[in-house]
Image (cartoon, rainbow, N blue to C red; front, side, top):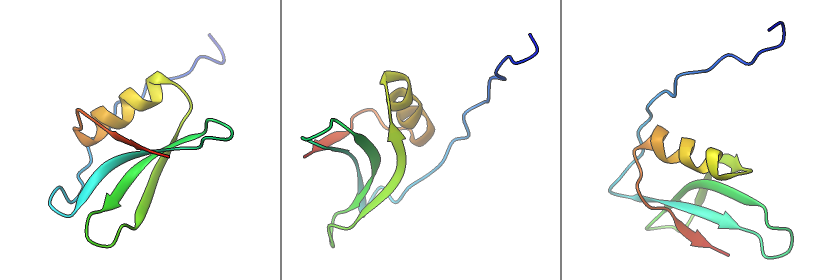
Length: 73
């Protein structure tokens, strides 16, 4: 009980749905995954969070209201 993790409510956040798309950048070498948003016009990637497991991916989707995330290698 002393070191129990407190559950944090996920804060809903917004992103530019017109000019950005959600992307999961995946490394072929070591399997690292980073979730973020890619600007459709410039191709610039904005990193949001490191994905370690399915729970992290679920949290990312819930936080930004995303149902599908495209993977890029």
